[in-house]
Image 1 (cartoon, rainbow, N blue to C red):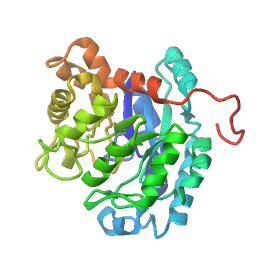
Image 2 (tube, rainbow, N blue to C red):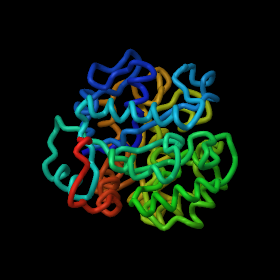
Image 3 (cartoon, rainbow, N blue to C red):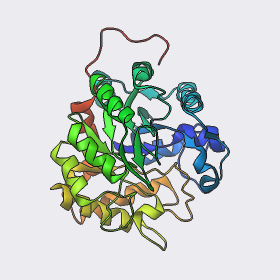
Image 4 (cartoon, rainbow, N blue to C red):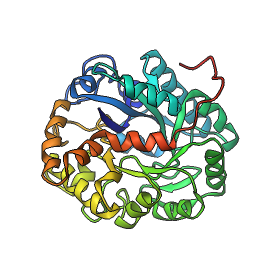
Length: 330
């Protein structure tokens, strides 16, 4: 089973009309059927909301001006996932049942929030975990909680409160998009499960959107995973990208973390990547990646990078099942 730790399925459907249940939109590669065809059985489906400052850069009018608007936008994405009947993995028992019974034709999701502004206050976190939220990245650019990409700064006071609430609710922390100072702040106070869902190597592509080898090593020391993004500007500074670039980042991360056991995929292929510029034009090309990785890693290690590493991490990190669940969520 291939695991992809970062897909903006809800955002693309509601902001750009690229629905999950139909065929991939022209020049894009993600849909339910394309995931199934490529052997992807588990994804981290995001709740991404764009702040007003992203309006021009992302060429979208689907933006929020305040936390309440962000809240409404993220809730609409939760509703979209329900409407798609996308099975949500909520706890360790859900995961084990799904993995043991998985066969081609099935796709399930773990819900990840990218940029925490939809959580209006940390005290509201319980309502989000009741809806199935299991991973939070506090930043995209700057949020009320954290400095982020191209927006330096640490965790805010509200951000410290959010991380404390996340620990109480057994939520996984995602460092992707967090500014360097915010990452340092998080390392100082965080004692729970930690990942970088879609972050490439800064030593290969400069810029604060990538993570340093030291950050990757610390994530691994804490038992976490670093996911490789397929976004063109994350793979190389300029020029056409290819799967060779993905392999290059995988090998670099493996060296930084002490082994490929801490490396996975977090493609972000549904995050606005026009396939004319990305490393693949059809999701079935993921099958080629196995052979390319095999030149550097053992067969078992390649299975790990393609999905087993994420599954092992989730087994350790998802909460234990509770006696009852909210009846409003699937």
